[in-house]
Length: 451
Ligand code: AMO
Image (cartoon, rainbow, N blue to C red; front, side, top):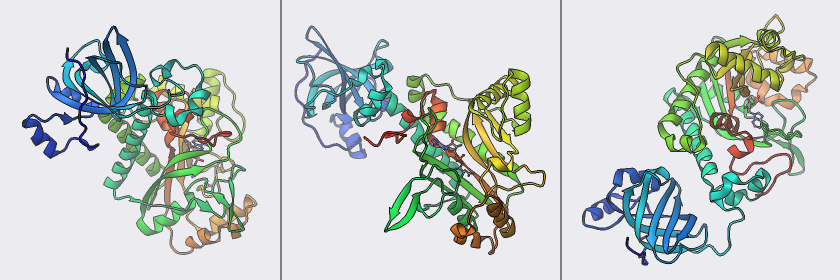
C-alpha cells in the first residue's frame, strides 16, 4: 500500500470531455462516488468531506462523502483531518466486498482543501444512533449533510423532477403564483398574517384560486412551490411550510378524470424513483409500492362502513380521522394489494367552497390515501358563477374578498379539476420516515424558525 502525499488540486469542476481525453494521456480524472463502479482498476481523484476516520496502527481508513455517496479510502500515513474537512483523495478503485458499496480506494495521495476548524455538533457517521431527533433538527444546518438526509432529499428531488417531466409530456404549463395574498383559499384559521405596506395580507395556504384562474389561459397547469399553514398542533404529518405539488386542468368530464391523471402521475413518479434512486432506497431500507395495481376508489360513506365492520373503528364527523385513514389504507392493502386508495364523495361540509357539490349533498371532492395517510386532496371544482356565489354565501364568506377570482367565472370557465400532493408526506411515506420534518431540508413547524 502506498502512503498518501499531497496532491495538487485542479479546480472544483466534475469530469469533462477534456478530462476524459487527459485520462487517456495518464491524467487522473475526478469522479463522483456514484460513478466508481464503472472505473474499477483505474486511478481516480475524489473530492468531498471527511465523514469518518479510523487509525488502525498507521493504516488509515477514511470514509469520504461527496454529493453522490460514500466510499472507503485506505492508505498509510498520518490520520486525515477533522470530520467534515474538505479533502481530495487520489488512488485506485478496487473491489472489496466488506467495504460500504463493495468498493474502496487504495489511496496514494490526500490533500486538504478546506480544514474544518471545529468538530461537528453531531458526528454524522453516528447520526443513525443519535437518540434525540430534536438535536438533529436543532443542528440541521450540519446534520442535513448526513447520508439519510442526503438520500431522503435526493429522492424528493427526483419525485419533483418526475412530476414536472410527466406533466410537461402531457402539455401542462408550469405557473408561478403569488405567495402573498389577500384572502385564504382553504378556509380554517391556519393563516399566517403579514403586514403588507400597512395592509393586512396572508402567506398563501395554497395556489388554489390562481391555478384555477390559469386554467383559462393554458387549460392545463401545474406548480411546485412552498405553501404556508399556521398549524397549531404538533403532529408527525404537519408542517407550517411545505412543498405543494399542484395540478389543475380544464374540459374534464368529472372527478374520474382527476383520479385517472393522479394515478398515472403517482405511478410515473414512483417508477422514476425506482429507476434513479436505487442507492438511496437501499440506504434507507425503503420498499416501493407496486405500480402494477389499480388504486381502489371508495366513497367516504363506504369507507366509514368498512372500517367499522372490519376493524371495529367508529368515525363520526364529516371526515375520516387519522385512525380511519390508517384502517382504510390497511383495507386497500389487504383487499386489493394496493398501497394507495382514493376516498371519494366527501360531504360539502368537509370541503372548501370551490369544490363541485352534487344534488345529494355530497361533492366531487376526494383524497388519496397512501399507506394509511392522506397525501393528496382534489376533485372537480365549481365552474359556474352563480353556484360559486351561492357556496360562498352559504358558508358566510364575503364574496368581496374573492372579487377578482369570482369575476373569472363570468368569462368562460370550462369544467375543471385538479389536486395537490404534499411533497414531504409523499417522500416520508415512500421512504418509511416516521416524521415529515425529516423530509424537508429546513422544516418550519409550530416552534422552529432556525436553522
Ligand atoms: P389540502 O389542504 O388538503 O388541499 O392539501 C393538499 C395536500 O397537502 C398536504 N398537506 C400538508 N403537508 C404538510 N403539512 C401540512 N400542514 C399540510 N397540509 C396539507 C397533504 C394534503 O393532502 N387546494 C387543495 C388541493 C386541491 O384541491 O387541489 C389543498 O391545498 O398531503
